[in-house]
Image 1: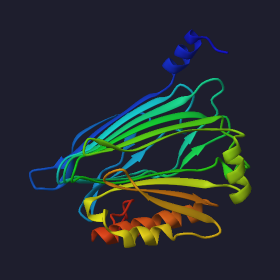
Image 2 (image 1 turned 90 degrees about the vertical axis):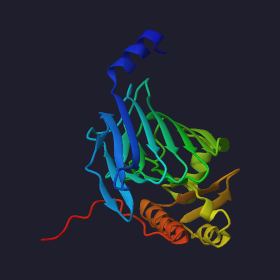
Image 3 (image 1 turned 45 degrees about the vertical axis):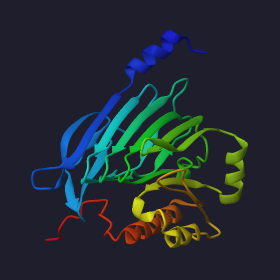
Image 4 (image 1 turned 180 degrees about the vertical axis):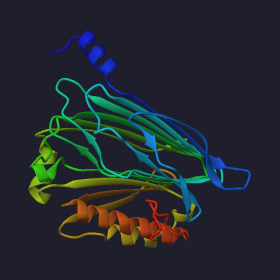
Length: 286
């Protein structure tokens, strides 16, 4: 077992990533970044507008997270602004003998603001030890569409649930009150993982939080989403304590998971009467 001094040295050697974004309306009434600050492994693409929202891709120019890495991010959307965050590629956590990597995230949405967060898959490779804590604050009248998805590992290399440990903590507050709290620890060889592996082979997981006053009473929308069932997909919908809904998906492959998430996104935006902003910049031809 490592001493406290050894652990401190390893943490000091890791990357200490930093991201701070503020999205607000500018003098033209257009969503724009009023504050931006970042440090590796974060890198920002050039923002662009689509369907009334500012779209921003967060890239990781490194190979992924290693032992001792610590990344902290804070994103705030002010009243009237709309921000869509996505990533161009999966984020990876590598083998971490005796150590761990951690991420601390905070998202804030003011009244009348809208935040949509769509990162690509998180892939914990064999021997990874990863900890994540996420806090989300949505004011009354604010809107949120928050998605996270996790792969079982490098499936093409035969790695399925070969990571050492994943610790996930998420708290969602709406109008100052706790709406949802999730905490779980997944360890290699744990019975729940083995049960999922027996049922799906290589299970992929996704979690969604949707907060919107417009969708609170739209039971038809949630009924359609909850029926996204198939032999290779489990889907569940539940109403939060306040403000919105939670959706959980388990799929037998990445293609099935992406298709289900895409359909959910289409359903949500249709119920809101919006056109879904493109998650990637589309380059003109010619």
